[in-house]
Image (cartoon, rainbow over all chains, first blue to last red; front, side, top):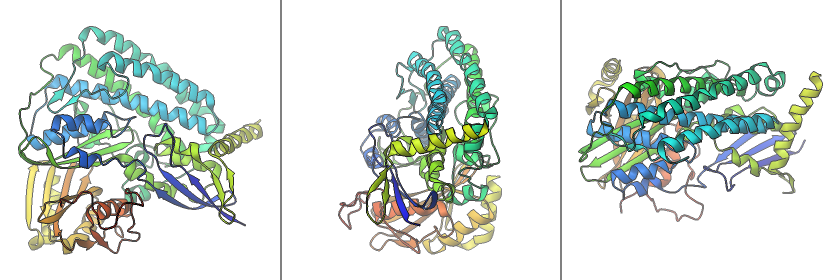
Length: 395
Length: 142
């Protein structure tokens, strides 16, 4: 049988981090996968060396468009580690509210796209419908729907007006029926089970070998979560739990993310309650940073964000190192996609929650003739047709 | 917990530990000579269960400094192995054969600092474009 190479990626106007997957396939089966990145390397670490610490926080907010507050959180954690600063309690609650709202909108975005890939466009529409109110809450609190600019070394830039709390609480409560809807749909639907159970399995050993983080690790039974392990913001002050699943397949990754959204709602509601009683400053008003080094971490929707700062005592970093979670998660596709079928590749690649838009640009090329066979649209169609087939067979 | 990990490292590598700096209870830096790095990394990863978060490279103008950040998730501790390598001939043994997840990290440091990771299975470019000139390292301070 002819072996063919399927290039997945790298460019799409909507992508926030382009990636390029080269799948070597024989018939339907994926034999090898090669991953290329670097299409969007903007030299942010180098640029950071020419910015003041205040500016660096805005700069790192631009690392990612979807989880835009994760990097500022890791950055302020690193700066606070460097200068040994205690943050006012009210600011801690506000930080957690922003971070969890972000997890909600990011997981909803992912859920919608995952639904689209396996041919459940209703899930896509509904998930994005319920993502909108989350962005509305952001607009209410921060003035922005994306890039909230809330973090500041020693606190937050903007307070939450206590008069707004009942309204925000109501909007967050309204998400719960939607989450129940998604949970029910995923748990009970035999077709979703057929398309995702046992597909793209990542074992516990693979997670450890590759150093995977976030939901990708937790869906394989590795209970790591920076919020619990290396607590920051208000996470040690409120009740919530780390969600894990044992199977490591796409289904487990869906379940982990949906259950995490319930935990996010729990955290946000407790933090809002605390804001009613905890008043005071929201900023420790830092004047300068000492020479030395600092490490800050944060749990982004996709996993651990790691920032390292080296300071010489001036107002700019000497070295600024950033490691985003997808950097560790994307290589795990070398394990999870292998041996699966092409129609499962889209959902498996998407299951680690990298940038899905890559898959919009898929083309199947015959290795001998170089002729294009399938476009990105075709691959998604292939995946959707498989779902339709399973549906028919079930009836 | 952090003390226990530190004690085990000190116990195992006693005289090879050049310096220990405890920045805060959950942030510890340990200095080693570069020739012992693979052995120490292997011990931390296999025996102590540390997760390699990332490796930071820094050009200090005198040396190339490498920091291997290991996260111990059950205690939230980060132990960073610090090692200095010669700036004119920067090379160190690769840890990718020990930890699969180090592959991209070492490739990135290779192209940005020009560090040669001996024994790396595929030391090609990761982020820089194909037309970037050979021998120019963007994060070096020239």
